[in-house]
Length: 113
Image 1 (cartoon, one colour):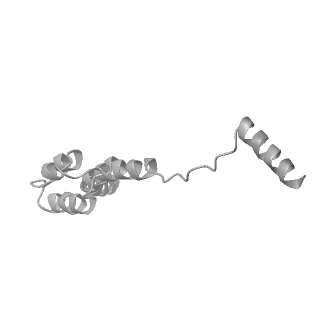
Image 2: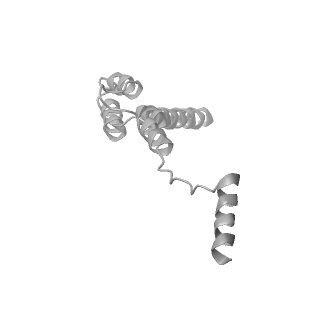
């Protein structure tokens, strides 16, 4: 009788472990796409979960899609880097050089005398 409860406990544990592994695998393509900055993260997440529901038929497609970048689109991380690198700098006010400041002082002294 005691062995029946032990066996039942082990089977419940295995079922729970299987559910956890299935949930991790269903979320994996979306997490990979998010880490890589893929522009179509949400679609890859949906494809990963549909792949889980269809017993893994579409899951490899989602996994491959997470590692590829469609032509003509840049990953979000590259777009952020480009925007960070493009800054508008204001021109600095030119300070008069040594000769220019001397000439200005001489002109001011001449005007006052």
